[in-house]
Structure formats: structure tokens, C-alpha cells
Length: 305
Image (cartoon, rainbow, N blue to C red; front, side):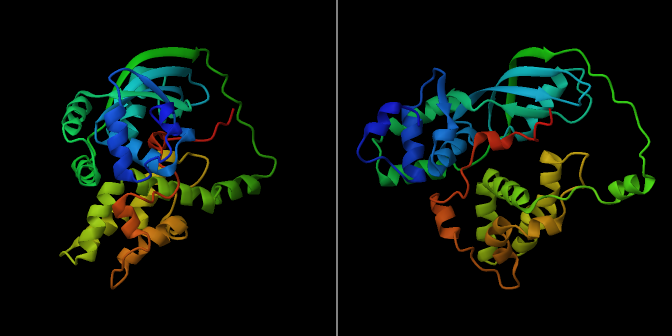
């Protein structure tokens, strides 16, 4: 994914540990373009971990929108770590016309380069020459997440003029309006399943650590795990990140029905906690479900224009 010449090698690395080593060893201090749509799930997972652990930083170009009566702006920013909400907060702070929720639409391609920490780590791993033990050690050493860092470098207004606010019209049938207020649109099951899987991917290291405590019967571990990855906190996170005023908040029943929740969370919350079927693969970094993507960290909503 870093060097197109790598695709010509007869035996490409296919494990999380191997790819972490390869990507970090081959990364540059100069900006390099990468299209994440062309990456495999394992490649995307390794790339995401380098971002979360602060080994590389990204240069993102996003289109940001607020309310229909507010401007649209193109923003170029440099980020690293868990920048999920900080990116949106930084854009909102930089554009005074934005008064409430902001949605960011990233371009398909991003640029990356080694951070100062990544440069130091790269120098260290090159002293060892690689190998299964060294690759496993590197994966463990950078299996953490740093707080998000966001720096806005460019900001350009795409549309400054404000759209006229629509005139309020009384509904022809008052009962229809009342029904609309009583029954806001529901959350489609497939959409909720996608957001649950994305939430678990984005917090994978914390999930694995807390799940292992549950399986080891550490005192209070199951309660702490439920408080972090139960249906209620996941539903609240989905509502905060991708909810909007047109529909009701995502509820715990929506989350409970998803395949991702039943597969990865429910076994750990049983009276006798059990290992999720894919737990060993998750520990080994070989299975990430749907392809994890640094762009999943940006709150996203459909384009209604």
C-alpha cells in the first residue's frame, strides 16, 4: 500500500504484525499519497494502528458542512492519534458561521508521513532487521492510542451566501404532522450494524484488553466492559457521531439486533462469559471485520443536497 513496487513481490505479507513492520520501515518523512479503497482489511487495520499510535500523521482534505443556511468549506488539516471528534470541533471553531453540528466529507485519497515518534521508531526497528519475533514485538509496542491532534492548515469557503430559510407551512392534515412527530424515522438494521462494527474497530485495543479481563474473571471487569461496550454506550456513541434531528436517537434495542454486537459483545456479557468465536483472530490481528478505515473516524452523514 505504501509502494506500488511491493505489489510485484511474489509473496506479500498478509499478517497484521508483518504489515506494521513493512509499512513503518518503508514510510517516509515526505508526504505520500495512499488510496485506502485499494487496501485489504489487514492493510487498513495496520495503517489505522500507525495513525492511532502516533507513528504517522495524515494530511486530510475534507468538505465540511453545517446547517443548510450555513456555508460550505474546504479544509486541509494534519491529524494523528484518535482525532475522531477533535477534527469536527476544530473545524467548527475555525468557521464562525457554524452554529451546531458539523459533518465532514473526506476525499478518497489521503497523504501520510512519519511523525517525529514514527521516525524514531523506524530507526530502532531497522537495527533489528525484522523477523517474526521482532514484528510481534513491534505490534505490541505500538498497540496503544494517543489523544487526537488536529492542526488546520488551509480553509477555503466553497459557498458563503446563505440559503433562504424555507417558509413554515401548516400541514394540510394536522394528524399527519402529529404522527410524524410521534414516529420519527427508524434506524435501518444494516446501517446500525455498520456503525457498531466501526465503533468496535476504532476502539479495538481497549476492547481486547477489557474483554481479556472479563475472560480472566477479574473482579468488576464485566461491569466495566458493559459500561464501555454494552448496547447503551454504543447506541449513545452512534447517536453522537452520526445521528441527526430527522430521526430518533439510536437505541439499545437497535444495537442488540446487530450481528456485530451479537458476535463480539454478547458472549462476554453472558452470566458465564464466553470467548467470541473470532476472539483469537482479533488478538492476532488477522480479522478486522469490514475494512477499518481512518475515514471511519470522521462523523459522517448522507449528502442531502
